[in-house]
Length: 226
Ligand SMILES: *Cc1c(COP(=O)(O)O)cnc(C)c1O
Image 1: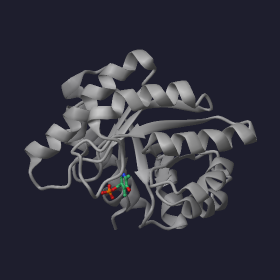
Image 2 (image 1 turned 135 degrees about the horizontal axis):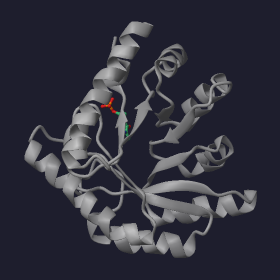
Image 3 (image 1 turned 135 degrees about the vertical axis):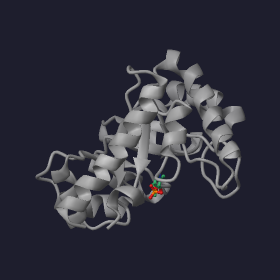
């Protein structure tokens, strides 16, 4: 990817985000996370130079390699992948800005335990499996609020900042929309408990996600395309 392409990709996403968010309200701010999991360190650097500052990875080892290689740039690193328990310590040491993929109370308790030992705190979102799909991680919408409260009570070293969902895996826009609305409704109920981010929307559906109230999108392929 050359600089000109990166600038155009970013401009295209920003233009679409602007359109979508202004249809909600001029006060509705959306944060863009560039998901770099399929991209090279060189391409991340080019996109950084085009203006993108927040990036996300879905594997702890990739986050480590890329963030260490790019440590001279003030990049904000996010973690969006399934977190295996044996990788928790490695992830904590990388000090990510936000973990989007806290997907069970069990994982939260394990993460909290390791954070306590290291005397650290980390910000995270509770992942909700909004369409109750077998192939996806996350808590069921039915127990999401209860689980969120349990994490707040039992895991003082995890700073819960909201929720994350991946849109339903289908071509049917109505079903995807329903899955986003389910997560947004839960998010709204969690705002009084301190929720700030509703992370929904990827390359194929971020405008729809914003229309449903997302304020944080995770875009990979459309931002890094050649
Ligand atoms: C890969 C990934 C994305 C980005 O997907 P694209 O379709 O490439 O935009 C967003 N969120 C998560 C959790 C991912 O794993």
